[in-house]
Length: 503
Image 1: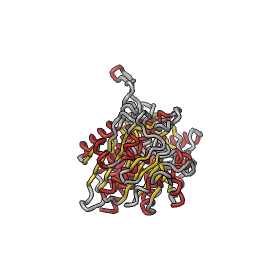
Image 2 (image 1 turned 60 degrees about the vertical axis):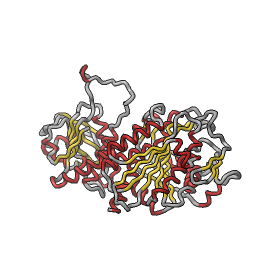
Image 3 (image 1 turned 90 degrees about the horizontal axis):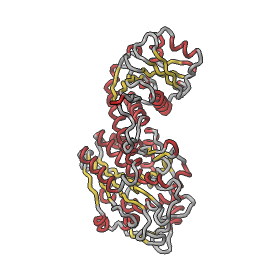
């Protein structure tokens, strides 16, 4: 999809389609009003017939509107004018894409970015519009047989070019900056989705490492991949305990985006990279086990975020750490009752091999100490308990520092990629006591997402740390099965805010 920025009149567009908004009670947006005046009240007459009420998400396609040069005018319902916020704005943009998906309108001009949205600048409105449009048109067909043959005359439907109109000529510069922001974020989200959606026989630990290396080469940032022998030398016994049942070799990916000041302490992002999770000896039920290819979405979100900040050339020092492996059951696999020695020296009694994410993350959190970080954020599809607690709308947020938690919560609200602050009181820590090791890897069914975070907190005591449990938000099931790309928007907003504060 090709984007451009314009400042022009809606009735003078020679596009295949012009998109304008209508509020409830038949209140026309400025662009819709301009077309209505040029057509001598054509839109008003259509609305009076009851064909559209302006409710949010409603759409109505008009053809050959008098007084206009475009082939079509698409009316988008905006809901109540006083309630029109960023969320409603994004829904309206998404509705416009959906309405045009099966149409023959390939060259489109949208006037939705002209709408007044509470607390949003032109730059942010354009960024959101680009993000939503690219998200709504995302398709994963890399491993499908191509069904469209343009040489045979098949018509490729959907939006090919989109011109975003702004109300004032003086807004064009900011709009272009917003477009760059939106495209950069969409690129990272799309990459995270692609990595998650790939089948586990393609997206292996080796494949993830290769993708990180390719990204580093393209954007000129450092990438180092530690192999199994190096992990043994580092003493990552917990990580290696998870991978020992798999034929696929583990990888530990280190990415370094160093665009901040030399003395600036980096932010470290740690992504869980279990490319397939059978549960190990504590085998999962067979139903929906195919979705366990998404157990590397934490890793995918870190790689996606690195693509976005590289596109932005963000002036911040950021380190990405990705421990990646499979969790498989065979004769060499870790058993319930085994005791592993982590890189930190703490011993861990494995009571359930399906609680493996924390076992690879804990060694990565210890490794993060060497960077003397300003903050560490780990991202993991860690617990089904978090899905039970929060459903699929908010990611679970745990932290040993309230200020860091507030930063992430604010970033989630601003990016519409929300998280919810969960408790991690000392009262929960005794649930991880073990008779045979320093710590057990599970604390029972009650408060499962909390005890998982408490486990990780034992390895993050030397810095400010937060944990995002994205088990309920990283992918969708059912008819819309697929990766969501979350929490790339949240992480990007968090890092941009940090860069703005630092520079």
